[in-house]
Amino acid sequence: MKMGQGVEWALHSCVNMSWTPVGEAVSSARLAEFYHLPAAYLNKQLQALVRAGILASVSGPRGGFQLARRPERISVLDVVLAIEGDEHTFRCEGILKDAPGGSMDADYARTCLISQTMRHAEVTWRTELSRQSVAGIAQAIERRFPEARQDTVSRLTGIRT
Image (cartoon, rainbow, N blue to C red; front, side, top):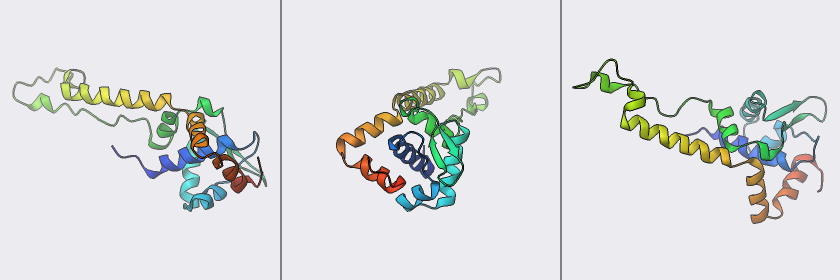
């Protein structure tokens, strides 16, 4: 499985916004400049997060984006699904129906051991991502890089924390 780069961009953006003061919006242009990313494409990712209820869009001269809910209530899975969609990564096509001894009436998506294995792996992957929050990542970054929060907020908003 391969996720698009938008997932990485969205997760970093959410972590950055988790550090900004409540009510303070960050423009997509500033985020794009911060990471040297194409602004239009980053903005598309941020809009997907707005549609998913992860971010709120703020209009006006100091507008931009801010978290729509507390960072501990935003899982990594929430962000991945907002950017990549909710389709399953593996789709059983039921090719066993046409194999020797196959049955047209069988539900191979449920009974095929390969399908079961892949479904189990995806459930495990989704469960692990749902356990990790934006707040948890932000806290881990702060422990490892104590200056990261202040430096990031200063660069994105001009505010010294």
